[in-house]
Length: 149
Image (cartoon, rainbow, N blue to C red; front, side):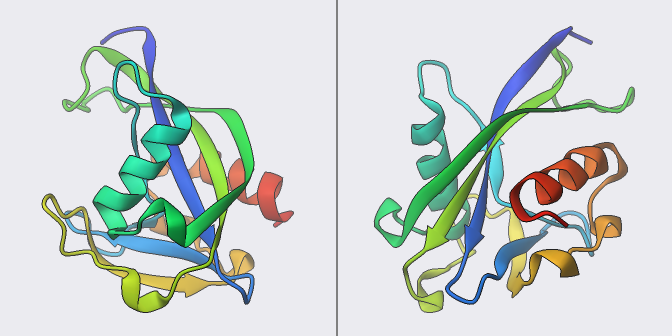
């Protein structure tokens, strides 16, 4: 396994009620997370964020405003993780985004679906058991850093 960390971005969409959007992974039942994805070579973090949100939720950049950006969140892949052998893990930058669109705009039936369901929850309602174990530390720090929970 490599020693490098794969650059990754994640979106925390916040609606007008202060709720955050979480989505259930298609391939892992009861695994809820924020939309996220890798940064392509030559792509800025903001461009990667906009691409990932559109790819995963069908939301155009006009449907949200980035209000905060925090980086340096890292997690290591488990030893048996085959998908990204050349990386030790991922280094994430999280973006808090105020959602200004309508819920009807959210569509998970994309070209390459990653989620089967989505919902709005209050930040303190996030259940860390929803996240695979190797990501829990990052989710704990992110929710504390952005929402104090």
